[in-house]
Length: 227
Image (cartoon, rainbow, N blue to C red; front, side):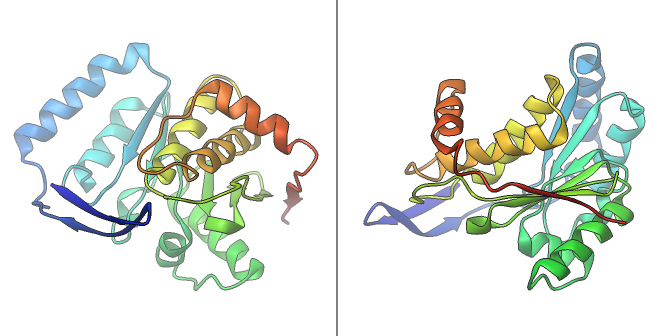
């Protein structure tokens, strides 16, 4: 149960009542059976790790094994679980999570680059998308390309659901045929929309197109190729 305290249209604090014990072996088997049943019809799986006991080391390992690299596996990570994620396709840490996962304190662009490269190497994934709050996001691809995307948010009322929006929009875009950079740009627009709404919000294709058109002349996206 989550209890949110709201003041002046902004969330001040949240109280959680919960159990964080790992899922039982029988529950793990049920989840894996469901994944296997879905495989013929899906192109991607999102593992959204809330540190509540569902995303376990065994679950991630078995999903990677049964998909055999044929399905794009995206992870929204949590501090303390980075060793679970080796072998997934894509991961979306925020600055704090990326600092923890890489062991590098991110304080500027140089340390940001080092952290992104470190995560790519440690996790053996195709890409890492580090979300940076008001600084936007940075996409690290395993081909050595790094793309810095500024935030497209015009106003920030509530960051609830922003991370979920990023990974959902990116994964859907990539699965539909966009490349990594295009998917990250679309995800950034989607996140910029939801933080401008109070509470959790739903982004429509129309909303994203409107955001893209309004920012078309203001984008300062920078892509560099690392050695």
